[in-house]
Length: 281
Figure 1 (cartoon, rainbow, N blue to C red):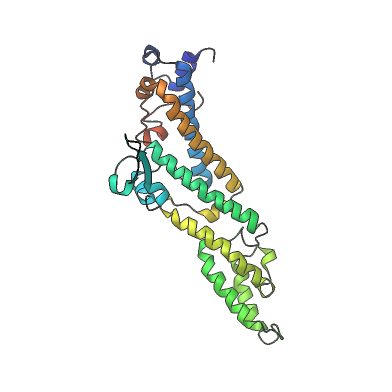
Figure 2 (figure 1 turned 120 degrees about the vertical axis):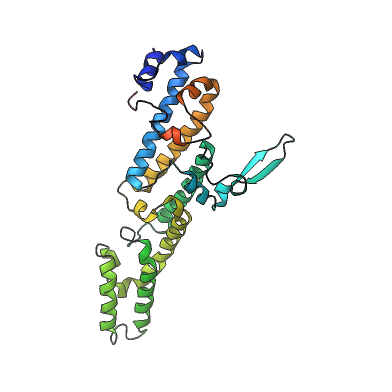
């Protein structure tokens, strides 16, 4: 980096003086790299919110609700005697306490693990799922009932010979729910496959319910043109850059403080009015 001071000035914008940062004596090159990571985190957050409807700039209220997830609620700390103590954030944290970068990273880690599990479930166990592009959470119970109803009408020897009109009525409703899932029709032939496939959608709904506080729509995510892979990649990059910000800041703490970045509160990290950084810097 030939001229970190010039680049830092561009990052900070015309309303912020670069001299106080230079006067700290801290490495400006490292400061530039760290501030660029902050900008990248903001871009990732905006992309995920625009594409998947998921806001990673968690409010204290949302994070407090997410503490119902044990992997987020319980943290381990090492005491002076090297004993490891498990602490419940639900018991030690006030509901309106700010969300820290460490808190956000624990959310990202668990969310990534859950989404990766669904991705693997689809790829390994249901690679040819026929309803996956049109399934919604509100369809699950109704589909189960339709499958059960049509299976009862199927005679071992006669098939649908005496129940064809009833089966047709069920198929009409099923088709109205999934008009573009051509491989799922007719239901009288595919109901064993559909019944098996319901296992996947119940798993997806279970995880979606787990993340209800974050307004996660997992069915919309798996049907998104970018796919679940894109979300996983961005979650991973967000987590990596957050840890980089913390790691790199050990040598530039004065510059970080001058910028207004606070590891104990993620809101300034994502709010350009609180920590002004030029996204094209």
